[in-house]
Image 1: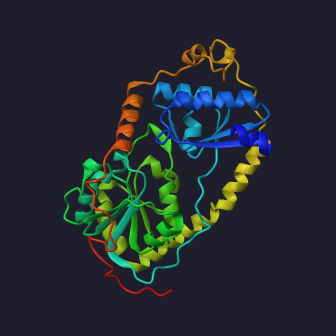
Image 2: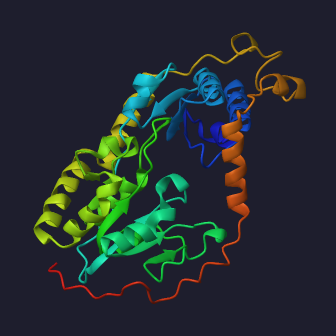
Image 3: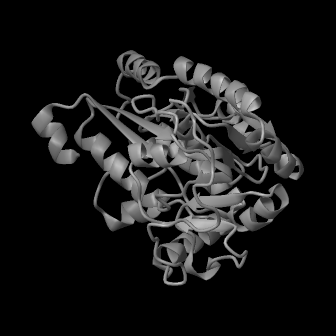
Length: 344
């Protein structure tokens, strides 16, 4: 980006950041400060997909980041709770591709997908599937030690990467799409997976959790202890399914890709570049962006115990073996295409 800025005359640099994908806050800050120093006329924007306001090291990170870039959050509540300037933009829905109704619907067969995360209750899918009387397909990459979870084919794992059209097409064949999240108020985030699932045009059911609060008007929100019963109701009632899909479609029409793009462009035009960060307002000796080891050491954020634990856990995950999971074959286990024909 340093090179492309000079070649293309870039006026705005927009970075999307997620702690779960980039764990080194110090490296992120150092790079941003160096870029700002070399390109003071470029407006920098950073979209924070999740905002953790419960940890001091994270709050320090947001404060320093806000001195170099305009910060965007996708969660409305984060704007109210944060003590740094955050600008809210609704997380859009991928409306460029919308699946056609599947010719063959897999009855009593549901699915979920997304990055592996213990907060998403992926470790409890066997229990949910058994209680609801359905088979579950999980499109993710669980760590090798998770194995097959030992639930006799009730949960089928798909770990091959699927692009958006292929994933949405596959999801459109299921009776419902389920997204779980252990309730937690520490991290203010939104579910991009649940929004992408809307394009499959099948009912989406989410666990009652702050993570899905901003989808309450679009999808079915259900407490965890009532999920099995609700899954049975939805997969067995075509009239209810049609009503839920119609509500989801209305949300998609309101927050299309075009609308969120318009909001971003308006923001780009309204906010000028921030002044180049200097040593005085972050307590760093020398100019920020300097390659001096002393300068970089002084400006380091000391990670708290929780951040270190999560970083170490994610690093182990990246190196974990997936050999315990069977290679995906052309046939699905845990229930086949036993559904009924659907009219196009």
